[in-house]
Image 1 (cartoon, helix red, strand yellow):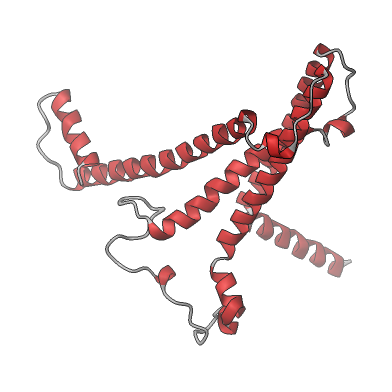
Image 2 (cartoon, rainbow, N blue to C red; image 1 turned 180 degrees about the vertical axis):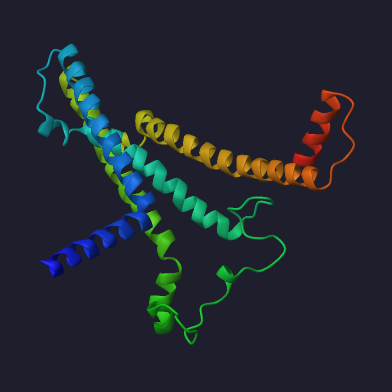
Length: 247
């Protein structure tokens, strides 16, 4: 009995440690599942509403999960997310942003950019192996994200085309072919409306993080080295703006 209690305590400790070490992943996984459930519930309801308005019959949930409506709505979002992350990884290799924690240091080489050394203690297996395996390992994150983007893009196109043809079929119109739909405004509108929001969010994160860091540093410097207080609010605002923007 004592051994069983010890095993239970050990398992409990291991679970607590595992959850603590992976809390962020589990949190976003839970949010993803909850959001996906919400999308399915309300998307299913909305799609059936559209079908009934067109004079057709409502479909079952199982049919909805394979419909163009669901596939298009899901993968157009995944596509933009993976594109954003892939471009962010690639562009931060070549481009820098002064004051951003997401950018490499402008004035010095960082450890992350040095060439892999297979003789170094604790070097990963691909680094020790070298050759093609090392080359793939060096760009594995970029390859993975670009692959996920391409897959999402293709599935989004398939879902969008299927949804378009389902709507045309209800209206008794001629169906779109793959080649025709490649130039259709609907598909590219779906893509670009998501891409622009992702690019804006990255721009906002980078710029707001710079402003926040400068505000913190400015406040800290003011506490450590107080200066003469400006006579009016307008002068104070101008001084603060200059400190934040002029580098």
